[in-house]
Image 1 (cartoon, rainbow, N blue to C red):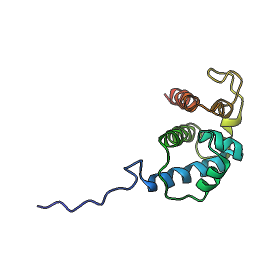
Image 2: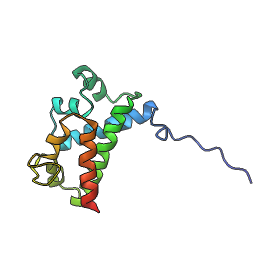
Image 3: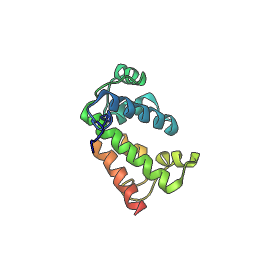
Length: 134
């Protein structure tokens, strides 16, 4: 019995240009749902420049920097947790903008915390939601 040659999955290699394109497509879709401004999007992607953001908006097949991929990965996890907790309704996407009195937010919204700019801030929001999910 012979094994048929398996076609390599372009998304399996996170350094591939196709993986970068998929990550950007997800990112911009989420930003639309969260109603994020251009400035907020630039910060969430690691304080990139405006011209880089507009280049990314064209959804090119591009090798993204590891930091950018890590940030998008955290945003994917946040999105997944919110969908599990609240379903797919408009209020799900409003959660990130609502003030939250619990730690680590201390009266700020999740988006305000994430906009502090550090990848650690994205990880903090993700860990919080993972904890709420149980």
